[in-house]
Length: 271
Image (cartoon, rainbow, N blue to C red; front, side):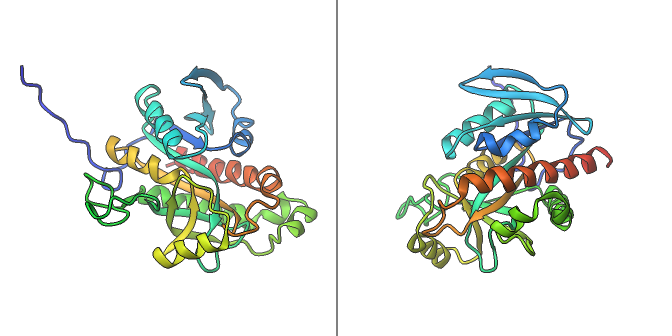
C-alpha cells in the first residue's frame, strides 16, 4: 500500500506557530542549573542516560536537559526532545570560545547560522558541505534570534547590578557586547592559538566556536523546528582557553543564560 509522504520545511523558512513547549539544551550541568532553579514545578524524566526536566517558566511549557558535550550527544538529545517530548522549538544555551575580532570574554553571541567546521567530505563534496543537503550552513529562526539578542542586551545593561564588583573585575566584564552571526561547531575543544587562527583564516565571518550547536541545527532543519542558539564567550579559543573556565561558568555564564532566557520567555508568553 502506498503511503503519502509529508515533507517538512526547514526551520529557517517555517512560519512561527504558537509554541506550547520549548526544549532548552545545555552541554554542561552548570550551564542549566540556574534555569532549573527558576522552574517551580519541574518534574524529572530519565531517558537514554539523560534527565529531562519538564515544567514552566513565565507560563511557557519547557523541557530542559543537559545533553552532554559533542555533536552526537547534542543531536541525540535534540531528537529525543522532538520525538518523545513533542517540543515545538529548541533553544541551545551555553558557553563558547570567541573567534571574531572584537568578540571578548563576557560577550554574548546569538547565532544567525551554524556550520560544522570539522565536516570535510572533499573531494566528494566541497569542504564543510553536509552531504545530501547541498549546504554547509543551517539557519536559525530569525524572529527568535532578534528577540534573544534584545533580551541579551537588556541583561548586559543590568550587569553591574547583578554581578559582584570582584567578578566584574576578575573577568574584565566592563563593556560586554552582544554579537549576531555565524557560530561554528566541531568535536574538539579549540584551545590553541594556532587552531583558532586556522579557523579564522578558513571561516573569517565565524564569531564563536563550540561543540554542539550545528548538530542541533541539522536536527531542527530535518524536523522543521524553529531554533535559537545563544552562547556566552568564556575564552578566546587560544592557549589560555582552559584558564578559569570552570569559575567563569559558575560565576558568570550560568547567570547570563538564566537571565536572558527568562527575559525571552516572558516576551514570548506576552506576544
